[in-house]
Length: 181
Image 1 (cartoon, rainbow, N blue to C red):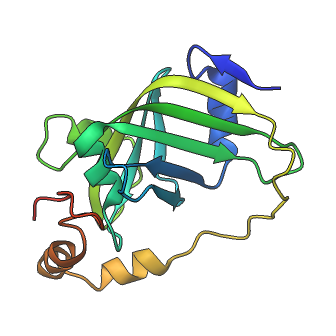
Image 2 (image 1 turned 90 degrees about the vertical axis):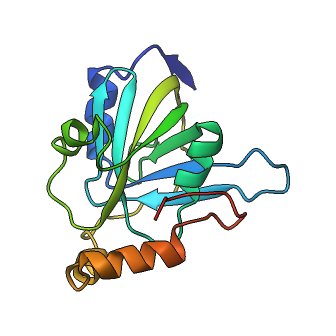
């Protein structure tokens, strides 16, 4: 049933590209801290090489992933097929928050379609790649991407985005530092 892989080979890369969304999970070190799981879509993931992936971190109502990755680097990305052929793939690894102005930001950003409202790029150095059956996952049909975030971002200038991030993205729900705003 489940397999381990040494790298994200061509077959896995093709399968990952077919998925319309994935989930990111992180947790703080504190036992009383909140585990975070976030869905991601909008063509925001790129496979950099056989053991590295990156995704655009877009402005949102929280910044748990950034805070947790900055604290302890632990992260897992889960891809789940909602089509007829069941399959789940997980990339466990060490995350890194790459901000605009960081050395690697422009090179990573060039891998993605232009997108307004990007806060950072989360790069993951993948240390464990596994799949599992997904037999109990329901079948869903993809209809379309949502454009709500794009429309909201189009109505924000840099000052408004900065104010929003200062209010919503400076610390995690557990009080860990997230974005330096």
